[in-house]
Image (spheres, rainbow, N blue to C red):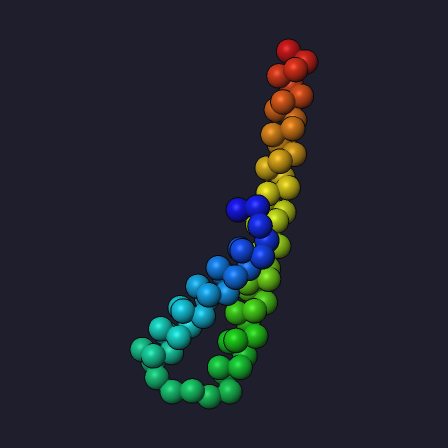
Length: 72
């Protein structure tokens, strides 16, 4: 996935769905809902950044492989 925004949105949606499903199973709302929501946003941002780093590393590896093929 090359687009960081798409990764962020998909992670956010997935995290919210998992959280709401888990909340429906356990039941009840309290102040922890706010903390978990903030954690979901932070987790989504971190995941998006990790995918961006992974994509850059992958591109650098491809460039190195192409360089080696040209020199051989």
